[in-house]
Amino acid sequence: MASNLKQHGIPFMFFRGGTSRGPYFLSENLPQDKDLLAEVLISVIGAGNIRNIDGLGGGSSVTTKVAILSKSKEKYADVEYLFAQVGVDKKLVDFGPTCGNILVGVGPAAIEMGLVTAVGNQTKVRIRASNTNALVESIVETPGGVVNYEGNQTVDGVPGTSAPVVLNFMNTVGSITGKMFPTGKKIDIIQGLQVTCIDVAMPMIIARAGDFGITGYETPQELDENRELFAQMETIRIEAGQRMGLGNVSDRVTPKIGLVSKAINGGHFSARYFMPWHTHPSMAITGSQCLGACFLSPGTITENLASERESSPLDMVIEHPMGKIKIVTNFDYENDDLNLISAGVVRTARLIAEGKVFIPRSVSDKLI
Image (cartoon, rainbow, N blue to C red; front, side):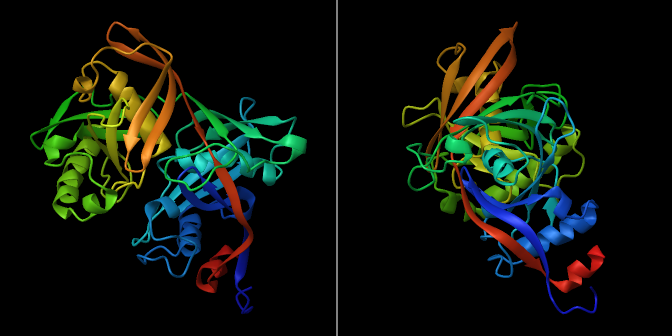
């Protein structure tokens, strides 16, 4: 292979999942060694260049994401889903977090790839998110045994309409740290500011937008131009990561940061979500669950956003820069502690392309 001038091609499918997109691979077609896998994915995306000009990335954190699928060996799951967040202008890959938007495409991809057989008009795909060990049930429309991408479901931040994909999340509390509040407190003081460090589907630091000198209603572009804001958030994020037991997070994308403010368009509250070095153009699904759990938990940073305690089940609406996202939550309380039973969303996905993506020989020669 080393003497062959032909580039190495890897089969893939390219999906939009929710408000993100990226290549979806079968695990068997990729190296199992994580360091070598990271090199391959950096080449696939073209990471290290702000435009990802030499790869499939789109110059944004929501378009440099990768899904890796395999048949599950567990009785309670059909598919294993490994998520990789690849850098944009940095040559890095973080296998720590998961991604709910890319997860929307996993059910359709599993059927298209032959990992799951379509049954009836709707096919349930049981997914284990390998990064966090969360269990997710995906319900995909499959009339005639074929994945349907046409429908009337809308998603704020995505043009047009498509067929709905239902996701029901279980076992999301303590996704990485093992605890909903990994510092043991519902409010911590970091760099003189009050924050809530919380881990539901995604470890996050949640704070009030006003405490950072912003309204919380700014556009992502306006926020990305505020480099003083990002510098302040990063020092807090690094210290919070240590307190949460995550170690040095300076080169990792978790924990994420969410800044909240009062709703202005009929939702329960408004939020801006950071990934963490850029502003999310809309809202992450995992982030919305974590923000929602914080909102429902008495004594957290979000307590002033609710006029009264909510009852279950609740269709929680979070406002974001491109509109709203609805989270269907089931929960109860033991004293003042939230017991989050499940959280569900309805999103859409679409298969955009399939074929082979080619990686440079400088990387592919290492696969020998």
